[in-house]
Length: 371
Image (cartoon, rainbow, N blue to C red; front, side):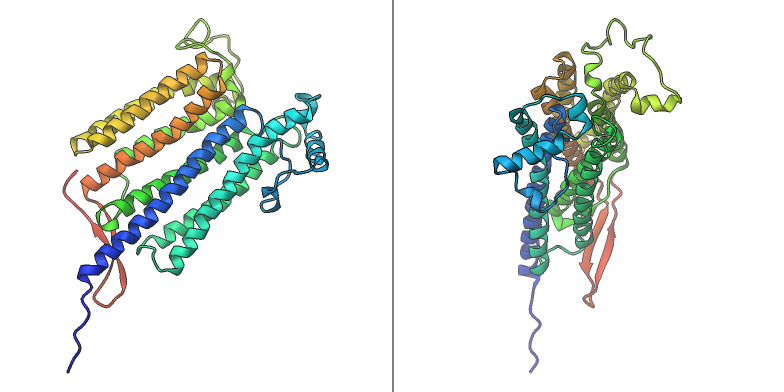
């Protein structure tokens, strides 16, 4: 008498779907924390708070100063920095506590994100609940998170000796890596939530759109790091002209696009409309394949972002407006990814991980003639 092989068709798919959704929801929660951290990071920069903590203590640094003696010691370390000696000399302990709060909150969120990612990842791995094919990507995200922490300190260290602020180039690296991690998490979650948890390939149009957006975000970081937003608080003119002809230029020429605050602000102003063109084309294309919701969201995000950028200039870089501008930048990335993913699903191309007849994991290409 031979026992019949158990049938898994009726139960395996719902279990697999449930696991995929659980992992996706966890990733979206982490993405929400990263969004919050980027906003707090923007406020930290706008309030000139980033150099208030002069030590990198990944574990013990989670506990802030609790006694008067500890506060005095932390303040004494800050008083040794060029920022204090050249800009903030005479600052009171109470004022120091204000800037300390934003940098501490930023670092605390980084630690929280690390735990919110690493611990559930270990749990899902122990329960063998990570969908097939997603393990390597989730591990890469963990490593990128660790790298981001190290880059954060590398950025802060640039402002502790010889200069009164952090390197705007290092600031840009720090911000762009955070947004790359955010984007990869969102894309992975969208893959997991799609039918069959297929790993989708980014459409070419979306790659160009996100590349243009990444360049704009880099210039945005340069604007923040160079305080270039204060150079001209008028729009669309910079003073009395579209571009101030009397503005000095640096040598060599390409250095102006990195180190010249006026050039950086000028490029950031007008490259926004190049991004707008890409986003509109993407949004219209995704609408044609049934993604009306995604089209509305990405149109709303890019329109709001441009208006906030103009308002930030006209307001003289008021804190709440500039912080909102940075926050909507993250939402623009998320909505662009949603539109791109909907386009990828409509195109029908991706990679699906399955078990073959011998129980061996294989990656199967999914192709479709649909554009």
